[in-house]
Length: 150
Image (cartoon, rainbow, N blue to C red; front, side, top):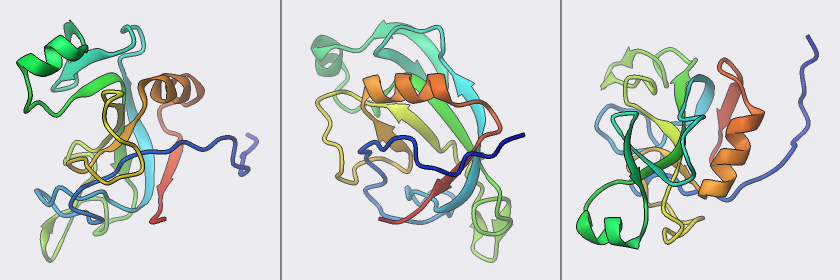
């Protein structure tokens, strides 16, 4: 199997407001080697709303935003990540759990009103909806994802 190492494209994203880290309940974005464990939402419309990785049947718009001002919007597609580095982003370490998969860390769509390039998430990697839909179509479960500090 041919391994592609060249950068194909680049997206501006938003990571965790709490910074970099991998501990359970830290609200941080974990670094290191990961894989795409699950792809969720491939048949859903753009701006589909997910709660607990399940589409609610809602499609995000300004009215929905006004009705639910405190919701952490997960939209369009979900790439659920799993860490590969034991004690760093997989399993646990001396501080407790640090497992990316068990922390429900995703790459997912967010409202287009949310700024990119500014850390604002609860640990996930947020993308523009058009970008996550495009990326979703190019990747497969099991593909590697390296999260690095910029």
